[in-house]
View 1: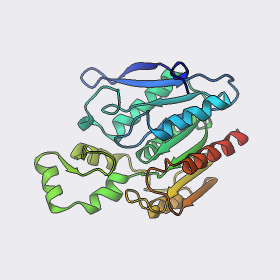
View 2: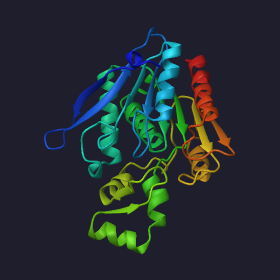
View 3: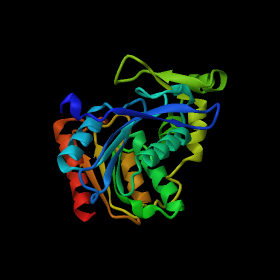
View 4: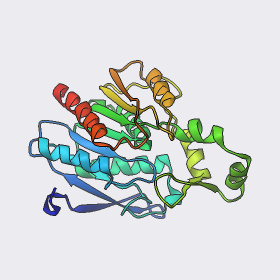
Length: 266
């Protein structure tokens, strides 16, 4: 991909006065308006220049599809303080960017926390009677409800004390020198955004890609998600040697194949 082929960064302002932040996105326009657009929803502390996001845009370019990728506030080149980030806040930004791009039909591709954001987007669209805009979900190592289901049960006494006293705690990251920061605000807001509290109806095909050597989101969590998607056409691909990133060439090919299957039905 040459530099001239990469869509320029666009910006929108999201949030009311005092809560406003600049959100950066790249939007590849379709060569045809027949097929749905691809929307990338990244994970916690990831950005729109990651391996999977770029691979998704490359696939969209090959197929003549529209592709939208963006950075949540506090991530990448977007504005805002990461410590202010919550699921509600990042969901609001996803909705705003999709509206700014003027997308009609779309396939949501969510990685890790992005899978949670995708499922919340489904709820929001269906609540407005706009569920028909969704033609598929591809969820890669999805982490819905990760704050209440994966973090809170494992909190140490020291971490609980840090949350109470400082409003956050840190833990080492396997993906870079900077530690992960989890705030009390994120955890409390996560409880309000839980999706694994009942049946989830998406009204569209769902394909889950999950590594069985994922140390961040165990594959048992993906199996739990499957139980809540009992009303949908769901395919799960368990990758025996796959980790949380699922960014190897063979993993990217699985993502591509999942999307191609949905495009064939669109």
